[in-house]
Image (cartoon, rainbow, N blue to C red):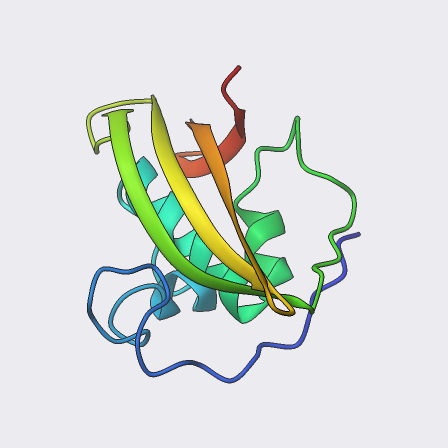
Length: 134
C-alpha cells in the first residue's frame, strides 16, 4: 500500500505557473475534489505536487502499470519554475497525450533543469502519467 505523506501547507501562488492561486488551481486536484481535465493540467498539477511534496497525489495520478510502490522525494530539491514547451493530444476528447516541459530546480546553491516529454493516458476515465516518451 502506498504511503501517504502529510499534506504540506498550501502556497499562496500555484507552483504550476498559470498565475493563479494554489487554492483556485492545483489545490482541488491535490485534495481529490476534482480531476485534471487535460493531460497538460495533470502534468502541471504533478509538478505542483513535487513542489509542495504531495507524494500521495503523485502516486494516485501515476498509471497502475508504471507506478512505483513508494515514492520518497528529496527534501533538498526546491522546484523553482515550469515551462510547458509543447503538447499533443491530451484534451477532453483524447485518450492519450504528451506534454513536453522543462522543470527548473535548485539544490543548495546549484540550479538545474529537467527536460521531459511525458506521456499521459486515461485510466478509469481520469488522466494519469504513464512515462517519459523515448
